[in-house]
Image (cartoon, rainbow, N blue to C red):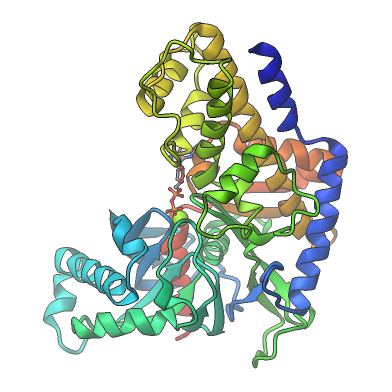
Length: 450
Ligand code: ADP
Ligand code: MG
């Protein structure tokens, strides 16, 4: 067993040479994406968001956030001094709605907005002259035509509502809000990464400049401020000098020219609805790291090397494990690895020996570390592309998502790989949690349009 595990751990290792290859490829593919959109390239979507928040913005706005797992509705009050107040409710999105019709889906979202308003904003429901401006955080690739319109390019993260592809998602949602007579106007459609970028800029009261907002949650993606004149393919009207670009970096290297590709990655890709797309995401984000762990354990079990005593396990069931599983395992510091054992039992129905628990932890660690190392190449790619470290003394990066927030040492591991890639300059980069990023960011985008 030990030899097989060591070999697999080795297959997940990322060499310094590989890091540089990935960095080069990222810069090249991102630069191409700024010039031209292609089906398989990095989308690099202009977002029409051109104002960098200062922290002095004020007012109360609604925000709706469709991530990959939950739908959240909140009202956000910006206090005008880097701070905010937020009231929120969240609901999981039922699986049948994630793959059903767009009408039923947006009706569900509108109904939740109604529930939220009835519970928290009775005054709005009672007054006929009031209108709420809402920012809609929609974390899927959308080709934006203005701040509040854009067509859905494709679904990711397990969603597959076929009749919504190619349609304007703001329009679909607005129709259902109007059908309920909610007096809510969708003023902005906001990618969650743009939300994180805006929210972090608003909260950041250091002299450092926030230039990237990234998400490591169900999926992974980032937005950054780019010079409008460098966005070659942007043909819209814009007087501003800079604009937030939604990279959709989940699609970095869809053709696998440089990304590591183990047999476990190959097997995982085959199980996904968006096969051969979002190949970077499938090695980095929350929807996939638990599944990768399952793939490895399944192989070791099938070849008779691990968990021989467990007969009624459920290792053969795809997507049974969320990334909280390896994440919790990696927090285990007990001598007999109690937490690892509990997770194996709870999620896979596996009894384990101490050696098996040690092996499992080593594999989880290898998968999590590879994710962070690969992520670092994309982060550094954006730093290089923007020449931010030549322009500013210190550069700030806003992050959000459960993997970013909770996965043990995820950010430290990103930093480790960054040290390899940019040396001492890594010290001039700060990472901060974009607290309530999607809510505050959406509010800031809804406000920008007034
Ligand atoms: P969303 O993507 O819907 O905005 P999150 O940012 O909370 O939501 O990300 C959800 C993903 O995070 C899930 O795919 C899950 O696998 C992963 N996750 C949940 N809890 C943890 C945890 N404690 N540590 C690491 N990852 C987690
Ligand atoms: Mg999210």
